[in-house]
Length: 113
Image 1 (cartoon, rainbow, N blue to C red):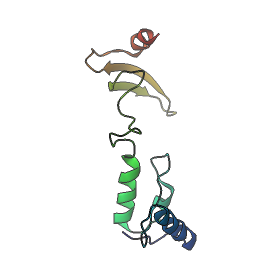
Image 2: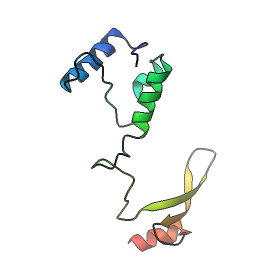
Image 3: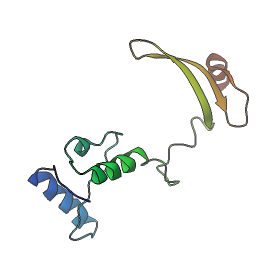
Image 4: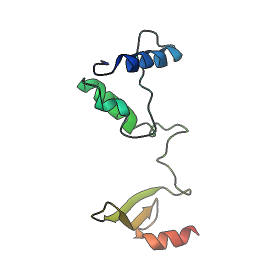
């Protein structure tokens, strides 16, 4: 992987992050709590950008304590259908809880109360 495109300060910070993890001679770009990782716009090596994008995209899907796929109020949501308006807002239409039938979103919400 290449750090091409990063500033000297960013490369130094990445080396420091690696050193903290006992990875001497390497660079670590710590993931932030966002899908679009800030260094993506600066990195010029496609392979490095791809690796960083995938790490950010999948950061909460590792089956550990940070995995967010499993539950919302103790129910796994498999299907979420919504209508998106021109302004980017959306109106939820229906959900399908695990093992359950697809239902209108309002009916699902009433069941959570």
